[in-house]
Length: 252
Image (cartoon, rainbow, N blue to C red; front, side, top):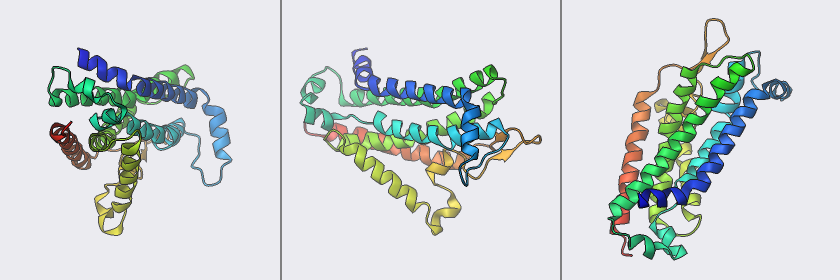
């Protein structure tokens, strides 16, 4: 329990700030949907229309909230022994009567649990508050995006977690992770790789695959892209496993 409490204390501020922000933004996008949609309709080139479902997609799953979630995950992945070494606390951590494998595993598990909670927050808030303003947003659609956020978010988390295990400094791993993320996203956007549709920023929001229902009221997605999600899941596992191995071999 001591390890779990330690991992929670190290990440709780980042997690709680992120959770409050996600809940607040989700609630605002729902409760203030009329003025938001009126303002958005005046913006040149903005996709607007009478559908409440399109409003949610524009601002939550393909817009502001999705971007905020991605940035939050970068910060959740920070930590690691090199960072503690730079802060002078690594000695205390390594003196605990547990293996490095358990140290890293617990920290990883806490981070992934926090990521999952953040990804589920909009799915719990939006359908419930929509009913309060006499609107409808399907819980199944919200959970569909939560699955995308969890799997794609885990890839971002794993990358930051890996660089945190390799690099010291307060924000070195953060900067490197962001740069590598956008470089990789640019690479998979190049013509030879475009047919594989591996652009994570598009997968996480089902960009280009959304369809209207028969009444043209609900903007829904198709089946989850399991093949592409499997690729990102394998990459996540590989990066997390590498982070464990790097931590076990560090000579401090």
